Length: 229
Image 1 (cartoon, rainbow, N blue to C red):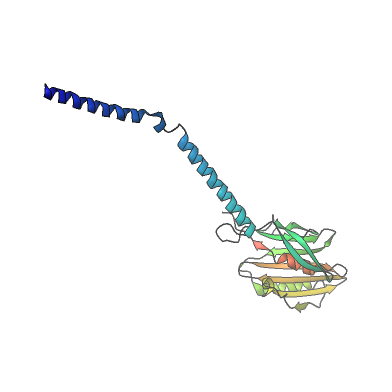
Image 2: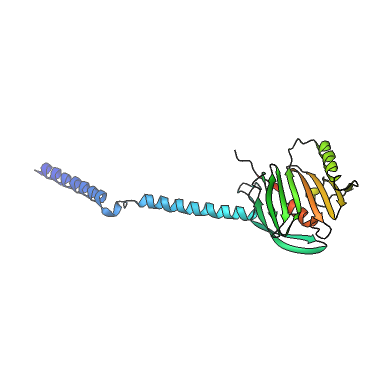
């Protein structure tokens, strides 16, 4: 009888323990609410997206693409220039050429438009006879032939084609500069060859409307854009 009583007592203890385990497993307080993990994941994803957007905005403001490459440009920049000897300061706005693979900053008094394939014109809005022709050149352009052809073109304005000193700016440090004047017009040509950019600028000014410096200040903001693959 004593052994039977001990056996019954042990069975009772085991049953109580098993009942307690089942209660803990079935306790609603220990069951995760439906969708809890999904909500947390969505919240984390939304937070990550907001962080990425903030980083992209900061990258756009400092002129980088987030990886240190200077491909993203701010939408505007202040520019100091002179017109007929008078110093001015204004805000220039970023424009993308629809005709050639570059962007540049353009002052409010000027317009950028395509002239023909591989040639654009940046002109004075109130007088389109005052303008700058922009031609991006291939990296393997024959520079000697280009200079000869440019001199011949200027010869149509005047037989007296002058060679000028390049502006004291890094953008123009290796540029070849030629000019000719006649019939109230001044035509200048700048052949620019930099590490990542080769171009020909032809400036058409009038005796009473000399915008050469304004054109040059805008031209030095020209930057080739990444080719879309």
